[in-house]
Image 1 (cartoon, rainbow, N blue to C red):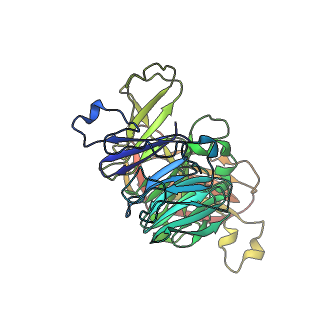
Image 2: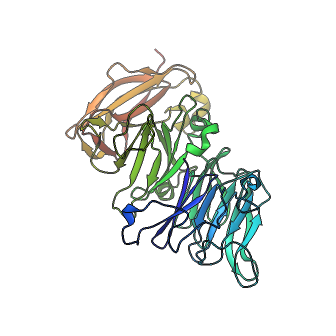
Image 3: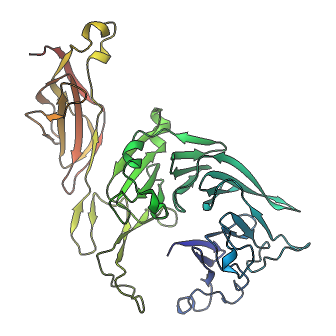
Length: 427
């Protein structure tokens, strides 16, 4: 199932999507012998709605908030996709508004259903499938105030948003967005690659992760031919701010995860990956079989993926340049060289800030933009930490460079690219 998990002090509050809310008291005398329930001593949820899509606890006022919930508590047929209900302050089982409590309700207008919510700086962000709202504590008599701050920017799935340092990032069916007080559309250099291949009907599987060790926001998503998450796209917001690239620094990959927890309590990020074809061995699910297997990964440890059976899988990576041409770089000679200038790459000097193992450099050339790329005769070049230069024979109107690792125990960090490029004739 798809769960909402939050804490009320040391008490876990768990809501199954479109179902009931349960609590589990980690401070009980024997917590591991008790299951989460609606009747947990001193933390009952018997008066809570019985059909809510999402719940969360207000971080400063400690109201329990139900999103896309019932208009009549206990009657699941009254579940309203745009209706919000919040408890009395500190009273997670009190929902009837009175003159002496702070329980209440609100219905949002823009959209057809509430998709997700996040606790952010001094506010709660609530997304519908079309809009973004803020929910702020305003005191009596309304308790919370609601303001629409964006439209045509809805959330694609419940877990497709993250927040860091007062800025929220999320994936929408219409692209990528950020909110820092105003909604901003994020220009994405790989947007066509993502949205031409993503299965948007499985938006609830999409999960966003934050890797604050490397200032990365990651979205894991299912491609068009996959039942489960099998690809990811990353925005490096730290590098974007540093080198001021329009649209940001984006990259993609194919090693997907199902869920993600950033380095907060633990020093490294943790993530899970679901395999529908495997068989889980722990814990035993009473009365169920054929549920597949989920593997827990600790990230940012070493250079390779160590599998549950002890084998190692190489974590491969590459970067590839755009097509380089001389024409656009010959100032004052553009018209003279238009369509005529070939380039010759005679040598290049690798400049790795760090290099463990080997790296491969592949040169691709084209005569025309629509041509199929041809790999040059001497490519790929194997680069080691002792490589000073590589002589090449690359020639064409357009040239691109790919740097990669594809073997275990390899990692690298690149510095400045130095190329010996010269104009050349067509023959």
